[in-house]
Length: 140
View: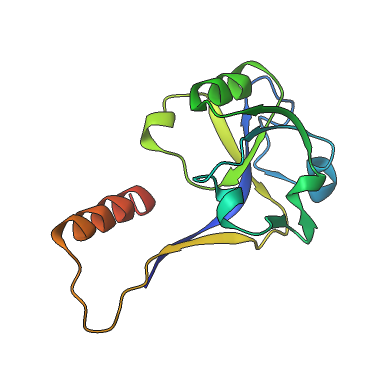
């Protein structure tokens, strides 16, 4: 069952020249420096065979920094002109930071949030609570 779809975007801090824009072109995207998470078992890149944005693979982007620290990733975006490729979904704990998300022009790539359940199967109480939390995060 589908809960929500979210489109691809980039996250920029106030030190990035694109900060006052609302969107970015593919041509601009290719010129940016990126911070990327490490490809571990829980990362989006591990779950998808290949992440593509607008017809090109994200491995063609220029990674400048790799980290497994959410704190370091946030500080790099806040304090430099480096950007992060992501999904248009800001955690409530990150709304306190001066980070904006820019839509990628002409982009129709998205991530679908949802779940699969066997017909005539009832979700456990914990599963129902998890889905409520996810829906609250996605549909505030």
